[in-house]
Image (cartoon, rainbow, N blue to C red; front, side):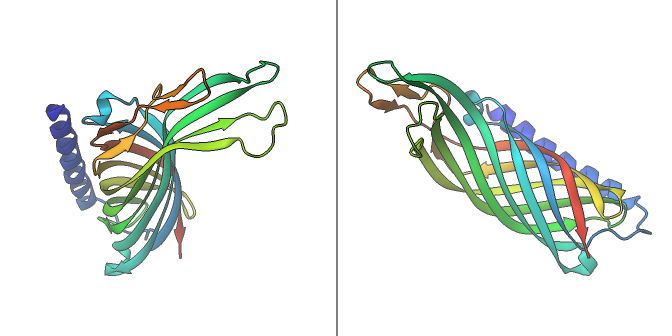
Length: 233
């Protein structure tokens, strides 16, 4: 586990060094965006203690940046996203078993962060690095499909926890045409110790009660993004 964390940090250092090296050879004839908004698909890989309990997760992220100084090379960046790292479906039957519904339980992380982004070179290809501080909201919720017409009260939150975390990483924006850029990147998330549920940690009892078996551990992630961003003039 310790070796995995060291390897992740080493990969992050190599990424930053590689971006700085590539920036030195870029042609800045075409000016890139001063600010941007973007939408990305995210694949998250839990590392450390959480990596022994949770498989990979997937989700979406919305990002935005506004120029602060240095001709657009320094930006204020905001990231908002959700990652689903577990999902299971069970069939619920009432005591007469005349009515039944599928119950879907989802394990998710909702997160938000804000911090600086440094654009190493502006143009048709933009390498950048960024860092941020924010919150991660770990939540397990269940939803019952309303096959029998029970009404609107079909969603419940089984368990949740909110922790502070640091986020840092880097990536490349490559012009796809006009103001559109293909945006790829990698991020490391260092969260505080979190309490969370995984698949199988919500157990229904014969009497209708529910038992929860929460986990408590470091909740660090490596995430990989691919999406599209649009320049703001």
